[in-house]
Length: 176
Image (cartoon, rainbow, N blue to C red; front, side, top):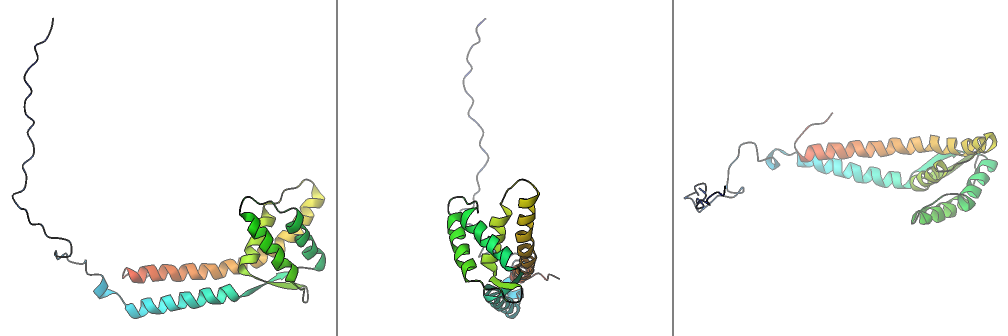
């Protein structure tokens, strides 16, 4: 049995506003929205200055890596001939090798800046091997780098903490 088509009913649309002039957020007064007047600009500027100074100091800081001649030679050999890299990581390998060639051992210690130290740690941590002898050799290189990197990470954490304080100050919030 065929149904008869019924004429379509016009859809009822919601009523529109009679108002044609609307205020913008700038024109509206919302209590508590005026954060800028409550900000401690002196504190914000002081934190910004402290962050900049800390970043500069860390970029120039040298970290002590306790390493002997055999370990350093193994590290240089690894970076030159065995460090796995992918794509533009090749630039990192090249730069680390350049940095390692300039190192001199003083009383069983070499001093490295944060970036080459992190890069060495990264490439050494990617190494693979089999058996006890390669594992022992790996650990003799990895451990000194890892210990020195922990010092660099502490400095990086200080910067992150300062950046959190800065963000909080920019929002008018106190962070402890």
